[in-house]
Length: 230
Length: 341
Image (cartoon, rainbow over all chains, first blue to last red; front, side, top):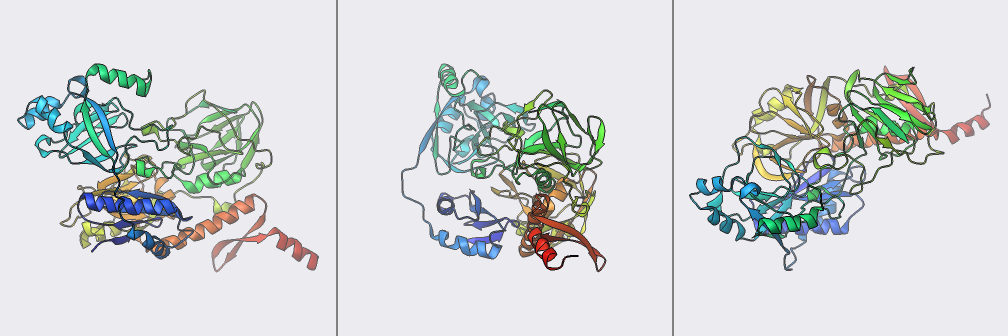
């Protein structure tokens, strides 16, 4: 039975709306998270929406766990708004030095490289949540025909903007970091800009569309986004 | 202004953390031991969230280019111009003085607070350094840091009463609130977790402490969950059955089942346990954990007022236990008028 409520330590509680990755459940999650955030009660530290749950970080000096449960109850009836979602286009160079694993992904799935590009750039991917590293979006909706296991040995350095596949998931590395995803391309867009508020390009509830571009276009956009820095 | 003249690696500027951005994937970060850090700030008349220097195991050397009041928190030898001075006390340094902070004799994290605080360019509302995403950077030799204006706040010669000085041990009992994914563990697994000693491994840092010890058995639900959020002190147990305690620089979300979350009052104890040190876990209720936190904050409020000179503190022994009592200064004056000695 959902929703369920649990303490997550002495300074947070979790509201669980389901037990599977599902667009409708996730929409409810964001509706409730937004409603709590919008009301911004004094005791609230912050809200973190995930695939199926809302973490409410609160100040236990202001109210106890039981009081926190009572305080969030009025927000549980919040319903997703029927507005047009934002579609964010992600210009991406596929293959070559930008996506060194694209041949592997093609071979692994008995496809050509062009098939992989077409299949990957076709769907609208839903941003279910952000997390893990600054600006990383958990995307849903990848075609299983291009699913590929992770690298056995993760790379020590993956450049910011790299687009990868890990199992049935696809994602974009927002910052340079180590990583084990199969890299198929790279976007020149900045997904995380700490000087901006909000600091991330993608937000929960957005839809992402990958748009294949040429190397020339990549560097043009890159300069605009990052300046001369590498 | 102060200048860093000798800087061990991983010396950073921290405050109490960057809140409000976890939903964008940005970790809270901030000080690893909020008790030591807040007490250091209180000693120099600052508020809780004032930016200060955090160091790991070994402290930096600092040259003062202006006079300033400072305090060092940690079990460590401290010298000012070569002359030994006490940690857990506020001192005055004048232009040209050199502060040398040695190696911690116990604990892992030490702090240096300056009256008025370190001025930094805030990123998303905080001075907390998060190295993995280059939010701030590690301090290095030659760095010059500006201090805040603090003409009335900081005074030298303030000392934390002895019973309030934190003691760092390498064998700690850590209180936890079980869950939120208890159903991912068997009864036997939970029993193992609560009855065994777990050793802090060298593979531990500001992100989390990996522990070594008896394997914790998962239920048929397994070690993986649908990715959800990770609160401070969350204890994840991946498929190998070895717990990881998630600390200041933890990622905001993760996919391993959490058997429990460390009570906030005990997070500093975890952070200050060295590699090789042992932790034992004890389950308490969320209500008990919140009561412990309220008691600690009541004490902290009074310690702040004591150091600010608003109350007086007395150490008393009763029934074999030591207590601190705090008496309003006004009360003392009133009584003195009524009953002149």
